[in-house]
Image (tube, rainbow, N blue to C red):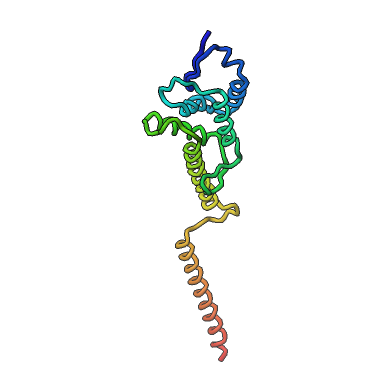
Length: 188
């Protein structure tokens, strides 16, 4: 029985897919990935072959590509070109692979790819956008729900409140002075 990989084009007996140590290692690594990454990675591997080429990708090359990608996905943080270091999540890579595959479907990607830099840039951009959204939500939560029960006000409103307090204090002081003058003025 013969089999063909629908993504990388490898053709051969089924035993080839099951007996090769590199194939087993590649399948094991990809299978251990979370979410929809396993399905996406097999498609992503096809981008490393020249379209229409009769040559199949070797399992050793596929394993090397998968190990590199697995390292990026499993890192605790993600950074690109000296940018901010952001917490990494597998979802960023899944979204990044989808974006790369979409760009390839539009014919805007030069194949065969020779590395993961384009994917890394997209995954970092997604991570940075998520960081910004989470950071903004956190700031908004702190701004609008103080922990000590005080009402949070804008700077303009705070200035108006302080003016009112100053005016109230001035009026109390004037009333107090009037009482003092009245008390001491009546004795003279």
